[in-house]
Image (cartoon, rainbow, N blue to C red):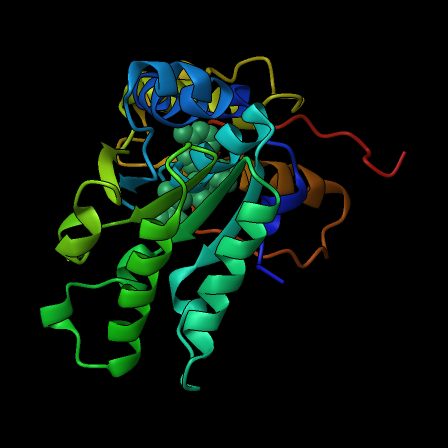
Length: 265
Ligand code: ATP
């Protein structure tokens, strides 16, 4: 069974994505439009994309975008992480990829999301292992075999686009590249609002100020900040709770006070 992440079962909507409006627009035009209206593309004689590469630093929302597009367009979603595909047993990695593509075809429209694509498809000259070489070859075969109807789209995510085998970036493969960068102040405020949605914040909390003070934070850091602030409030009632703590600077945490309530009530 393909592995799905923590949020895998949760429906992600476009409302759950902070910032990235231009990027999301591009992803939607590239994937959702041909998926919903294959006839338009057929009539116009243009080929819908088979692969889209999302690149940028970790925790910026690449997985989130892929899930949201799948949820919103009603596409079947299969997520795999590069390293998990690599198997030391001969032929197992290729088999795994074949299964994933088969599942997508049977459940089309479908989106296959491959996180850490560079780990299964590194530039072949950088590759020492025989497994990676065969996996790249298999992935190329599978993508070349996809029907040109936009019903199965592969979204690859990587931190470094130049680490991907160039053969995979040619037309008919991952030929669309969209950068998902670190959020600016306005985007951080939007992300913060999403992650504190429904939280009983103290009246003096100002999310815009918080956005200003969190330079360098990516979406994943802001989500961790909100989580940690909530845990702080919880701890006033349950001092002994032993929840995993993210390393958020105290002075920033002080600015996101969550009102204490007796959560057991
Ligand atoms: P990686 O390269 O590590 O896989 P990623 O870019 O795929 O990172 P995500 O998994 O999408 O990052 O983000 C991790 C979590 O951070 C999300 O589940 C979400 O809670 C939060 N997050 C990241 N970016 C955003 C965003 N733009 N808006 C709202 N939440 C975000």
